[in-house]
Length: 412
Image 1 (cartoon, rainbow, N blue to C red):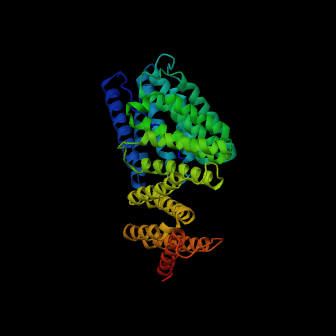
Image 2 (spheres, helix red, strand yellow; image 1 turned 45 degrees about the vertical axis):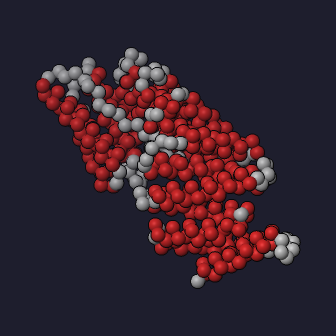
Image 3 (cartoon, rainbow, N blue to C red; image 1 turned 30 degrees about the vertical axis):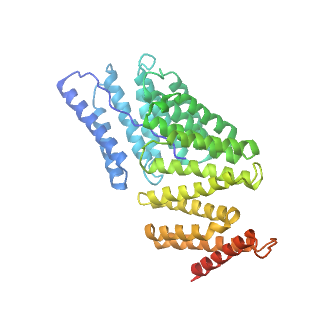
């Protein structure tokens, strides 16, 4: 559950002299360049983004900021963006520098008249939110507690924005609630986590329905995170609520051509919540082993595998574990509820895995398949009365024959 960051755009401050105007334009250009590099990803781009933002801070820091809110706002924004870049460094070595950058940003942005300028209030709130994200990355009990305090400060500021004036205002408030929910969930404070995700959905209002891409993603994230928290809370009612929450996430994403690995990952997380919830219901016989529920389980497994294999080229480290989870889940679901189709499922997915993945992933998948076939064979031979010639017996014997063939193929 990665926390959100907010990058800030430069203001258009007034110029007191031609020299100041040129320095201001140059500093803003370096900020734009750094933000573009940061969003491109990759270690080389990250290094260049930090360099660009440091140059922006150096240039904008030489402006006469006293009495010029535009210059002061841009300097504060430049420090926020530098902090975001430092915070995104693959290791945690730059988190101290990131926190220093956010502290400097808050010092500058806190001098602006936020009561009269929603933009200034938004930028100050973003600085507090990003500071909270840096403390969250430190991931100690003390830093998590500080991150919660910073997120609450962000929410307090963001609530004062005219939320219907700009989509970015609602998105900032929703981001803060989601990040706060993530922090509560890491501390196993599930009631507060669930309440925070509810508040995020409420903060977005009708914005996701307008088709705003980031609002849709945030709404789906809040619903998915809420579902994961409800599953952790356990209990019959919470399992059903978790499934419903994840279904709401799918509704937000349904028919949207959002693209990108982040949205594929979010979709997979929502499907995983639904799969875990339905499986829990079936295991506890909450709703009975209905054919519709079983069919939904296997459909979810196959859909998750499709998405994970289709997205793995963009980031195998992210999507290979998803592939293995849905393959293991699907093997378990078929083996328990529809063993007559298990061999076909295993062979088809292994064939696709061999065509689209590396040897290591294929070997891991073959081991899962072998265990699934062996387990299903044991289950079919346990406690069943078979009468020669009956439809049920013929089906069982056919399943046993196919699974034995599959098992022999997997061992060889």
